[in-house]
Image (cartoon, rainbow, N blue to C red):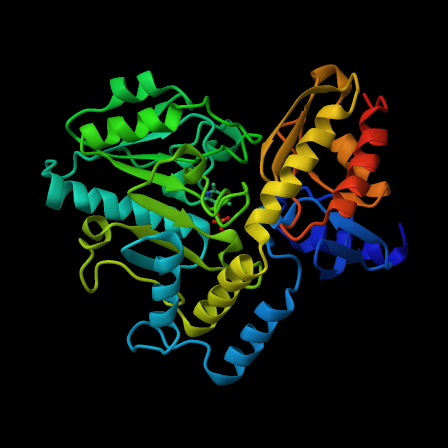
Length: 404
Ligand SMILES: *Cc1c(COP(=O)(O)O)cnc(C)c1O
């Protein structure tokens, strides 16, 4: 490493809270699927900022929308209307088939807002006694980092020494419809779940799970809240991952790729009933729904559709998954994925996934380990066949090495 890289890393370490353990690469520029470090080395980005940069780095049309809007008006607060919010509502509602939209900023805020909304719905519409609302969530969930959310995480690292936590959450195994049926009580207002558990290592539930989940929620008047912050907007090869299951959520959460990585934009989407319970003064955010965010999100949604990124995610995802399955390596325990949300799980004896990510970095690929033994692969949705093959070649040579 050159002096300058050591300098950046050391300065971060000296001043920054150590809540991350980044791969030792200092990025300075990005374009499409590629990023460059401060020395000019080029890498294929196989993380896409945890799926936030699905449209590719610095997409020119999103950039143009952002710059144009930044020249005109950036923030009004919701004390006044602005001329970007209404078209944003119309376009996101049309795209996703939703009736009501609540704009927020981070993914965690969208989750928190959904929790508040379904509780309110539970008291005011379903008739749950005040203070008794229950929300069912899944083991190994990841919904963000706020206090409310980490309180129902099952990852000890996420929770330890951050309590006390809010009550009202029940945890069941993911992919187990019988457990859901058993957990529902008259006070259950919602089931909050990821269509595919991303941070847990791209865990795909058994076929038919969500059909049963949908039926159980409908039968018991429980709101099905799908956290599509990572799976949504084309990542899995469909606009929303729920479409693979042939179901519709009552509440859908979007974030990450909603801005193509330019700016934090998230949204709660629902039918009329749930978000309809929020009255003036009961919820808000200074930056939520600001004109800059809306202009960026509008462009991010437009290019996703106009440039065929969702179809490309399906096509290249299948190519990538088949290519990974063809790699004959003793290190690989399982390969799984849907669309361009992929993971390689290593045998525990193969050593830490981090070592393989570092070896991939040396070959020009940036990927991120998750949970010790899993390498997550999620390139921007604009990746081409040649780029997939290029990545597969490097993955094959890396995974056939023994780095234990
Ligand atoms: C990333 C993520 C979140 C949290 O989003 P932030 O913008 O980091 O707050 C919530 N849910 C899922 C499924 C995610 O992947």
